[in-house]
Length: 304
Ligand SMILES: Nc1nc2c(ncn2[C@@H]2O[C@H](COP(=O)(O)OP(=O)(O)OP(=O)(O)O)[C@@H](O)[C@H]2O)c(=O)[nH]1
Image 1 (cartoon, rainbow, N blue to C red):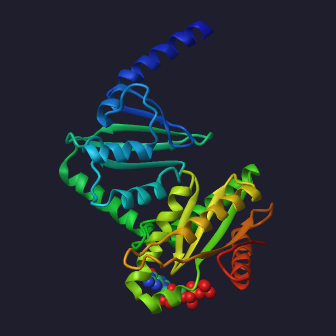
Image 2 (cartoon, rainbow, N blue to C red; image 1 turned 180 degrees about the vertical axis):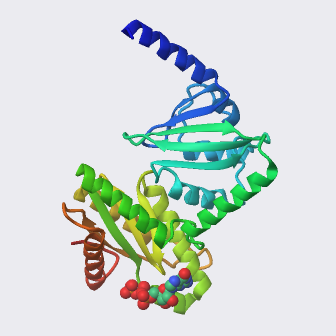
Image 3 (cartoon, helix red, strand yellow; image 1 turned 135 degrees about the vertical axis):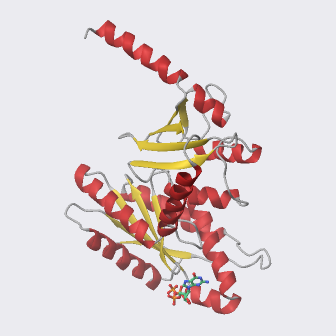
């Protein structure tokens, strides 16, 4: 095929995609909207050439009750949970309701440059029973991957993500920073203030860290007051800078309005992937670094 023919077909394809009833959108590696076709703009009430981030788009639509139906009374908690899943797999498909009554089947395909192609088709015609079955399966799948207290990944989900990122680092040689973060003297917090207040501190910790993450970072609760952070692509100094900022944000937090003077801190152990490392070796180094951070007085970062 000659170049002019190819150019003509590309033009026709572009026009067809733009006017297609299928919803199409492309988000860049910072999760900012780069392109949306007419159907997507109509469904999500996006003006032509608007370049909102996905979080901004969802927040705006939630406030105005347009776009995707979001079943929550606490949008920020919903956003933390949704962002902890978004962009973490090469390909993901799920069902969503639109506020105009339509049901869509949304697919998200990650591109090699970190951007995400979203394609959604209208499936309102499908029988309700089939839909209920699929919804039940989706909910069960999500529950199996989610920590119920904080709504971020649970141990099993974050360890799966760890294995995927490690395989990618081994395949392409790009850096991978791994940090274990543990809240300091958490037993004392529980003993002094009670378990429910301890729970609120754990939730506050997640809410401090989550906004500081990039879309493709991994963050999950390993158990208790221990968390795993996966920072692909970061050099050691970038990871250290980022972790120092997180430790500072946590130390500055005052999570209990009834005790305005109460603050808390956390310690972090950082390890960088080295060629030949398996998951257990890399994890063990981060764990040793965490131990050193605790031994050297807490509220600090150590690397091993
Ligand atoms: N509130 C609350 N507490 C929890 C939860 N999971 C674990 N814990 C408590 O977390 C505490 C962890 O205590 P330790 O492992 O001794 O650690 P620590 O007191 O933070 O001490 P360092 O890590 O050495 O700074 C225990 O008292 C657990 O009962 C939870 O979901 N909610």
